[in-house]
Image (tube, rainbow, N blue to C red; front, side):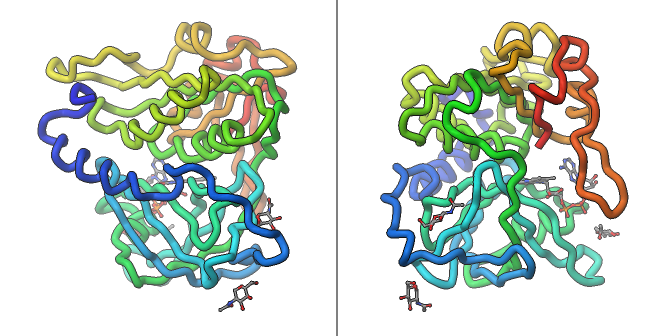
Length: 302
Ligand SMILES: Cc1cc2nc3c(=O)[nH]c(=O)nc-3n(C[C@H](O)[C@H](O)[C@H](O)COP(=O)(O)OP(=O)(O)OC[C@H]3O[C@@H](n4cnc5c(N)ncnc54)[C@H](O)[C@@H]3O)c2cc1C
Ligand SMILES: *[C@@H]1O[C@H](CO)[C@@H](O)[C@H](O)[C@H]1NC(C)=O
Ligand SMILES: *[C@@H]1O[C@H](CO)[C@@H](O)[C@H](O)[C@H]1NC(C)=O
Ligand SMILES: *[C@@H]1O[C@H](CO)[C@@H](O)[C@H](O)[C@H]1NC(C)=O
């Protein structure tokens, strides 16, 4: 474990990890509340102000932020895989703007929701606003919106390619399937970061894999490892050999999910299609996956 963390970061990461151990999304799922005593805390049509109850740094520029619902029995009302919009101040002070984020807590966590947000210091608008928030601050939240419906045994095998904060929807899907009684989906994740010290939530992801009875396998991949990182994982950008070796091939009963920064989409599967005034479309499957025969039937771009 020490090896995964560069010496300069060890103190901070270790401290963050022990704090994070108190977070609910790391704990056993709470018992389902009676549905008649629970109401959905947030609206799909307008921003609901929620109170920040904690903000913990869990990696380089990465924060785990907890927002409390008005009522302890409220639920998120989210169908996995879902996302919501968070409002934040623009950096230049010219008003507010909203960006999409993916809760890492799910619908069975009552009374609060949890976000993992990567800050873009000096350039980010909403990301910096969320990461700078303090307990007691309010954030406007609207949603949830379903991206792709994930159900137990919908696919036999699921592959996931995540880059940086693109881990959030992959974690949501993995946790949903692994906690669903009777689900047998085999999940393989390749989690890409720039360097070993950039990897975040590793203890959490490893624990999820360890208790999955072999159903959830994780491979870490870094752009570049330093000589003192003693790196044993994958190195370099994701390539066709890694996909062939670790992810399910394109079949009717498999799905490969991709989430990362735009250059990663471009290389792996082609970007999503953005048209002004319309929701983003999946776009054709090109890149590495396109070259291997994957189509829109077995690739989903978050
Ligand atoms: C469906 C969906 C779910 C998302 N879930 C999460 C999540 O759970 N956690 C999270 O941290 N982020 C998530 N994002 C990204 C998030 O919505 C914002 O794009 C990000 O926080 C930057 O917003 P900003 O307003 O701070 O910066 P902006 O003002 O939009 O841009 C600041 C700088 O960051 C760059 N940038 C913007 N977005 C990205 C990006 N995604 N990757 C790399 N560079 C970028 C811009 O090019 C610019 O240089 C998600 C995005 C989508 C589409
Ligand atoms: C979320 O959980 C609440 C409370 O248990 C329940 O009433 C609601 O139907 C759930 N919603 C979804 C979309 O699963
Ligand atoms: C919280 O929800 C419960 C169950 O629906 C309800 O009885 C109670 O009045 C609510 N409290 C507040 C402060 O809204
Ligand atoms: C983000 O902040 C910068 C100022 O740092 C601003 O110029 C830019 O317009 C903002 N982005 C959006 C989409 O509002």
